[in-house]
Image (cartoon, rainbow, N blue to C red; front, top):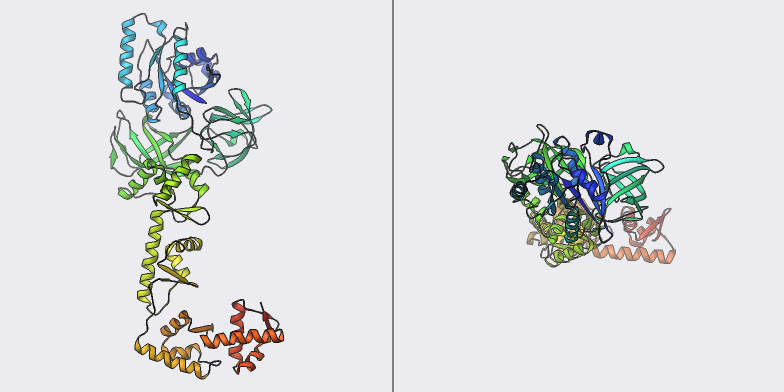
Length: 619
C-alpha cells in the first residue's frame, strides 16, 4: 500500500490534476470551492494496473496554509511536485521542495502542468532547466519531469505510467507489528460516531482492536475500518485509513493525535534531535529561540536548546534538545520540520534521535552528544545496548518496543549484541548493556575493597548496603552475582573471594581467653557485653560473622559447639515429649531462664520451632 502527496505553489493546478487523475474532487470545504483555492488537506485515490489503490494527499499551496500542508506530507511515500508551465519555479515551490528534502522524501515526479497555456517550446525548455537547477542537491534531484495539461488531458497517460513505475520501485512499507496512525482529520458520521483518518504506518489495525490515543492516553476500540471508501477487517501499513472509534467524542480528539496499541507510545515534553538549518533561512538559530515543530500530523511550540553550538548559521547542522510546550507522541527516527512563528518561516528540520531523553542536558558535553548520536546513527546492536544501559535490566518485549524493530531485525540485533558482549542476558528474559554490567561489577569490587580495607575484621559487607550503593534492585544484584566468581556470598554478607579475616597475635590471645570462658560454662556463657570486654567488640563481631560465636539475642551469645548441642537437645526433648518449655530447657542444660528463653526465641525466628502457648513444637 502506497500514498503519494502533491506539493507546489498556489494555483499551479495540484487539485485540478488530482481530479483529472482520479475523478475525485479533493477540495471538500465550501470555502475552498468558493475561493477556488485549496485551504486544507484533500484526499483521493488512484486505481493502479495491478488492482492496488494508490492514496493521494492533496495539500494547499498558499503560504498562509503551509502548516496544513505539513500535516499531510509526513506520511507520504513519494511526491508529485507540481509546477505550472506558465509561471515556473515560485516561492512556495522552493519551500515545499525544501520541506520534502528535510522529510527525507527521496522519490517523486515533477509534473509540469498547464502546458496548454504555453505555445513556446523554448520557454518550456527554459522552465525545465530552471527546475533541474532547483532540484540539484535535493532528495528529488533525479526526479523525472512529465509535461501535462489537466484541462486537455495531454500527458495524463504518460503521467499515470510514470506514477505506476514510481510506485513499483518503492521499497515495501515495513511492518513492525506495532501500528501507528497519525490523525490528520477528525469528524463524525451519522450512525457511526467519531471517525479519524490518517496514513497507517508500522503495522496493521484490525476491527475490534483496543487502541490508545496519544498524547492524552484515551482508550477506545476500533468499531469499523475503511480504506478508500471500502470496508475492511484489516488495514495494512501504508494505506489511507478511516477508523470508526467507540466511546470517544469528536471534541476529545484533534489533528496530530496518534492511534497506537495500548502502551506503545508515551507522550513527551522533551526530545533530542539532529537539525539541518536551511541555507536560505533569514536568521541564525539561537539558543532558547521559540519555534514551531511539525512531525507526523502534529504541531507544537517549543524552545530550542543548542547542545553543541553557540548558534546555528543558515546551512549549518547541529544537535538540539527541544522543550515542548505541549506533549507530543513521537518515536525515534521520526522526521520533523521547524518553523519560526513570527515572521512565519520554515527554517529547517531533521530527525528525532531520542523521544525520551533522561533529562535536560547540559550544553557542550561531548559525552552527551556521543550518546545522542549513537541513539540515532548506531548499528541496531549498538542501539539495543544503549537502550539496555539504564539503571535496571530491560525485558525483551520492552526492549523491542523501544527499538522499533520488527521481529527479524530485533532477533538479529539481539544475537549480535550478545555475541559481541554489547549486552548480557540475565535470568527472567531481561537484558543489560555490557557497559552497564561491567560498570556495576567494577563498582562492587571497589565498594567491597574499600569495606575490607576499613573493616579488616569484618567478614563482609551487608548485601543490602551494597545494593543501596549500586542503586539497583535486589533481583538485579542477585543476577549479577551469579555471573562472576570474584565475589562470594555468605548468608546476608558479600565479600571478595580472596578476603580473609586475620587476627593479630594479641587478638588471638584474647580469643583464647574468651574460649576458656565459654568452655567453663558453655550453657551460661559471658554476655555479649562481657565478651566484648575480653576481646573487644570488633573482634567479637568478627567471631560472630565467622560463625564461631552465635548471637541469639542482643546480649545472649553461645560458642558454636554449645549452640549446636543446645539445638540438638531442644529438638530431642520435643521429639520425646511432643513439646518443650523454657523451664524444661533450663533444667535439662543447667542454664538460666534468660538463656533458655533467648535460645527458644532465636529458634522461633529461624523457623526451627514454633511457639504454641508457653511451649514450643517443631515447625
